[in-house]
Image (tube, rainbow, N blue to C red; front, side):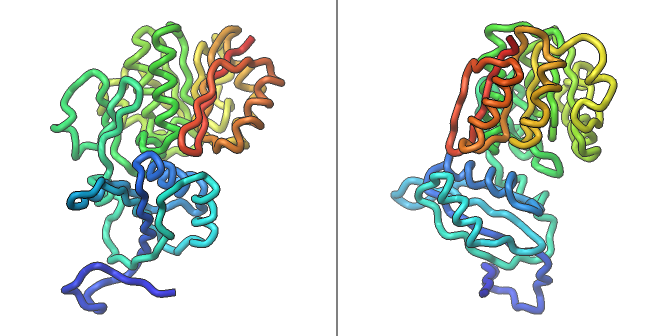
Length: 311
């Protein structure tokens, strides 16, 4: 296996190689987001950092580049097969570049452009001046918690929340598996009279979500707790929720179908994502069996968001 680096004036003894970068070039922006989401969601271990940026070409449409940083290279053959299975077209074969030992999490943040999703613009701190203080602006820096809207599942949930805000006024909202807290923050903007609870099994994600809620002026409206599923008393006691958003994975969503039904008010809405298109029907079937009806299904470049109502 060969490796290259792009620093023309550096010699090998000047570069301390501690990380590997996987590079994939993609023709279409949405397909590039699909590739980035596939890398972040399905590889184990996940990348240390991930960036997606536009590459300009003279007299040609732009292309898009996904960079993912690892300590150990993933299986590139399996990764290429997974990308093809998702229906991504115009994608280069994943290639490896060796990189110096730098803080690629911080450096990659600047390569993530703002994302418009439903009524929101999700952006990093490097774009704060350009985006401004508009009502739909949500500041989320890429880091240790999942959820920047570059992943199609987060994008799909934000779109769903934007639609639901026109037809319902929930009093209690749960963001289950909140990651960065972006969905809870979005709900606090759209549903000003709701009590919003956010939970995650990962304490680091909970700390990140609390910080993001504070940075976005939502800390007074969003309570963030550590919980595995509905184990925390705040989740399994008290009044039922009117809206539950769960952007996690297919297997835990299926396992949680009964708990979500039990803690959702009759007529309440569940927004489910983190699903590959191939997994969506299995998840939908589990929820139909638990007493839900389908309200809307949105497939977007390989990923699905389901909106279901408890009957």
